[in-house]
Every structure is written in C-alpha cells, then in structure tokens.
Length: 354
Image (cartoon, rainbow, N blue to C red; front, side, top):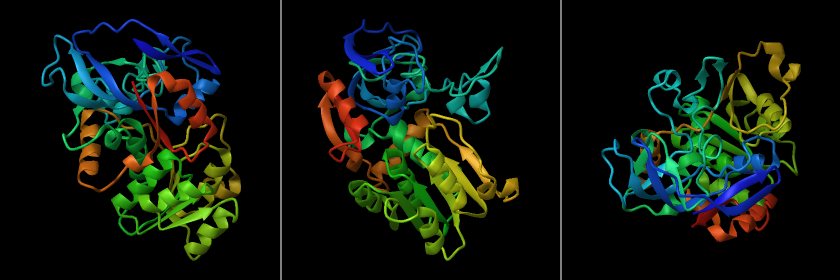
C-alpha cells in the first residue's frame, strides 16, 4: 500500500509499506478521506519528534476492510470514522475520565499524550489503509446522510476545538475571545457559540478566515494586524474582560494576550501546540493572585465522542464541511503539504482521497 512516510525532519515521501496484519481487537480501515493537521507540520519540522519511517496522519474516514477475530458489533464494508485519539478504555487514565491520556502511565512514571497513537507511536492515516487498535472502543459508524467531508473534522479538529470551548467552562451569556481562526480556532468559535456564549470575539488577520469565522459563529473579528487585540477586546467588553479566552495558535504572544483579556476569575483554555517554553508575565498573571484558571486540552477521542460530534453535524448545529478548501489525491500528498504549510491560496483544510 502507499503511505506518507516521515524520512527525517523536513522530509516526507509517498512510499510503500505492507498492508498491516489485523490482530484480534483491531480493524483494518480502507481510507476514503483524510487530511493534514497543523500537528503534522510540527512533526515535519522536527518540532515534535516521532520515529523516522512512521506513516503520518491521524484523521481517518473510511470503510472497514477487515475485522479482528474478537471484534463484534461492526461489519466489513461499513463506513466509519476513528478519532485521532484511540483510547483502549480500560487503563487508569480512561477510567479516571481522561481517555486522551490513555496509556500514559508506565512503571517509570506518567507520560502525557498516551492516547495519541496514529502518526505518533503507530502508523497513521495518510495511506491507503490504517490499522485501528481497540476497534470496539474507537470505531464510530457514519450516518448515511453525511458525506466524508462533513465528518472529516470530527477525528481531531472539531473534537479539539469543541473540547477547548468545553474546557473554558463557558456558560450561557458568557463573553469569549478566540485567538487565531485557523481550523481549530474556527471550531472553538463554533463550539463557544454552540455552548451558549452571547458574544464571541475572534482574533485573526487573514480576510478569508475572518469571513469564515463569522459564518462559524463569531460576532466580531478583530484584525490584529490593524489594532491591538487586547485593547480592542477590553473596549468591546467595556473594560470588564472576557469570561473565557481560547488560545488556538501556540505562540507566546497569543497566550499572553489571552491571559491579559481575562476578567478576574476567568479561564484561559489553551489549545495551541507550543514549540518552545512559555513564560507567565507577572503583570498578566497578577502575580498568581488573579483567581484565573489555565486549562489544557488534548483532543477527546473514542467512539462515543465521535458519535456525538457527528450528531451535532447531522442536526445542523455546526457545518465543518466549509473548512475544506482544497482537495488532493494521495499521490499529490507532497504538493498538499507544501500548500498547507505555506498557508497560501486561502487554504484552511485539505481533503486527501486515496
């Protein structure tokens, strides 16, 4: 089969690998649509290290090609998605309500990101086939009325963005600022509106993304290239600050700005993938005395999470198909990476169809 292989930092190729063998609890998925994530760019740049030779990608939509001997409740030929995070469901983290960190505990201590396996610790989804571990915990049937592109954001982007809004503890009537309107920020904007925020303020400079942010639920979008977003958000909230700020880019500047716009006792929900250490400025942190909460989120996974997200889409509450701006075949994967990394031609997300 064809597979997108990380040769070394800075170099991906479309190569060949054997079709995986299927264990008793596994399912072999024939990929019909997948995509490229910002995290894949961090991997490509060497900012997040994975083993050379790994197949990249963690957002699979496809058809069950083969089931393990112990897997029940599914059938071959069934359309399914699997989350980017694939919890086994039985370990300490899962049973404590944090399946994203499934497998994190070891005899040597706690290791984060344990539930993220595709394209991180096992071969991923930018290929003709992907092996899904613990299939009965992770495969979610796609409703007949939904297309691949409608559910393509569920495995990661929508789950992460909505998870950031959930982590922000948004209540009906809250005011929320979302810093950066990339794919995850756009889904966080939609999630804040879905949960009940009365005022959602996006921060972005790309005109295309600013327009999409308004369609996804932003009441106002601040162009940070023209005005200081902190001052403008404080002006829009009459100096009160926001109840919740969602940081969806992963930079010191956006993290600090998100902290500075919080009201006393507000929550900063951090979604960005940071490539270097963060600093907490004393003035923004109120020397640790501002009653603020800082929460981090790793994309919730598992089949029940996927079912809920697809139900939200099927019910017309969120439309994520609008985020797919470009389409490529798997043979064009290197071209797709070049476009996505360069952020040219109005790209938001690309659909890859083997």
